[in-house]
Image 1 (cartoon, rainbow, N blue to C red):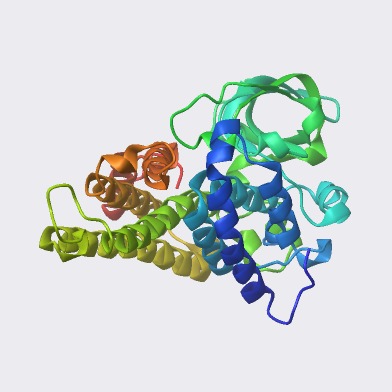
Image 2: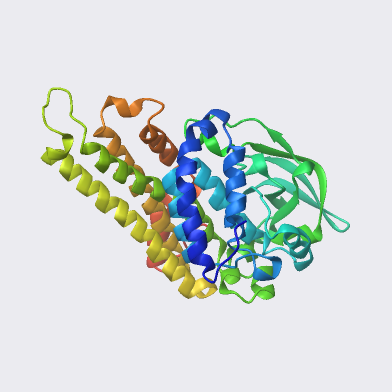
Length: 389
């Protein structure tokens, strides 16, 4: 890791910007391998980005969501899959800072961060035993499992009937099995394979309430002074997942503008840049990509202001904003693809990968736009949103 200066946030953002070309260069190989390349992970380690949200007491940078936003957008311009793994590794270190203190000190005290997937859907069953929970289950969407040191999964405590019975549990990578299931048309480079756990006892100090983390009142809120650690979980998760999409929209607009200057369509004698229809499409794409970015920036500013004091309507608005930003990013890339001719559909063209990747991102459960808009509308009317916000 490079030596820190007096401006750790600025330095980290600059390193992320410098890494974006490497992510773009390695995107095709990551897609071929169906996992992040070792070279990219090593470069990210050296950059220090995984320390972004870790408290300074453990050797971390203890930076906030505004820095996370700049880092994620910069990496997102390089490649969606590789940025996705990176932003989730960063966010999962924040999650680990919400576990009991003894576990945090043991884990993060070693090198200031860890690499962990977080398959948080409560697909597993956790049975209370002396000193912990006996865990069994299968979890899909294991983003980060291919280079993991630790694993976080969600489980319902046996015979539980409410959200309060959900737990997040953390265990070493060697105690889980990984099944190669990641055959997918978009985000192939994430390597988000299935995680299988059979009869593993997870000690109590490696367990935390999902409800408390969701509300910004888990152990980290009591142990660490920084306001980051009393922030509700979902907006941080949504930010991690949305930045690769918005970054790809920004990169797509820039690449389309550059290509227009030289591209002469078949049957024409002038560059595409001289065509009014192409100019209008570029302008709309630029504005819509800017709107998507503005939605993220506005939500981040509000989250940093309100944290755990936000109302249900505030939190529903944030979730809807992130979902709308991803939807707009998807539509920007689709529009640019329509105007880029058949050559943009060759597998070595970055735009076709961007379209597939962001379309897949938009299918994440937190970005179900109809559901998020309905929940926000219910909150505006004084009703319960009917889901996690």
